[in-house]
Image 1 (cartoon, rainbow, N blue to C red):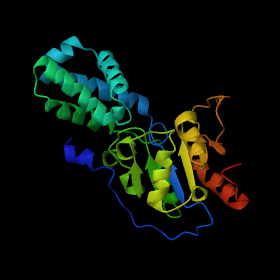
Image 2 (image 1 turned 90 degrees about the vertical axis):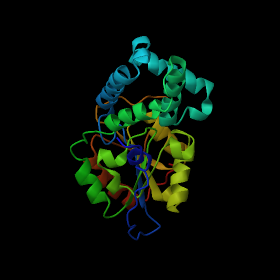
Image 3 (image 1 turned 180 degrees about the vertical axis):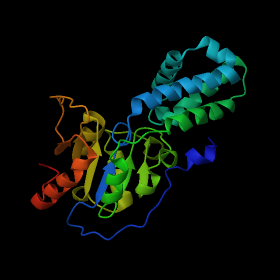
Length: 258
C-alpha cells in the first residue's frame, strides 16, 4: 500500500446536518471488534509482514519470529513512552533498529510496516454495519475513536465518519479521557451531546466514564461484565439495537453522570 494512502486515511470530512443541542448529536465508535472481527485480521497481517521481511530482510526473519518481534516492540514501548500509544510509529521504530543492527537500509522499515497496515486494514465488516451507519448518519454526527491504526478508506468506512482520532493524533489512548475530550473539542460539543459505542469494558466504557460521556457496550459474544468495572449505560449484542437505545435515552433524557 502506498504510504500516502494510510497516512491520510483519517482526514475524511462529510457535511454536518443540523441538530438540536439539547439531545445527543455525536456518536463515537470504536473500530476493532466493534465494526469488524479484529483478531483474525491482526494475525494475518503479522504473518504477511513477516513473510515480506523474510524475502527482503532475511537475516532479521531468520533471527526473530513474529512473537519475538512483538516482544521487542513491547520492550521499546517501555523504553520510549512517547511511542507507546502510536502503534505505527512504534512498529516502524522497532524495525528500523533491527535494520540498523542487521545491516539493512532502515528506510525499508516503512515499506514493511506499509505491508502490515494494508493487510490490517482489509477487514470484513459485521453484517449490519453498513446499513446501521448509513441510517444513523442521517440523524447523528458519527466519528471514530480507535486505539489502533486501521486505514479507514481501505476498511470501507471512512465515508461514514466526520473525522477519526487515534493515538497518533492525540498522543494517548483510551481509556485516557483525552481522546474523548479531543473529539468533543473538535466537534464543538459537551459531554451531554456525545455517546460512545465500543466493545471493551476498560478502554471504551471506562474511558467514556472518565470523560463524563454516556456509553453503550456492544457485547457480541455474551461475555460476562467484569464486576470491578463501572457499567455502560446500555448493553447491546448488535448495532441493530442501537437505534432503540438512542430513542430510549432521548425519551428519558438520561444523565451521563447517572
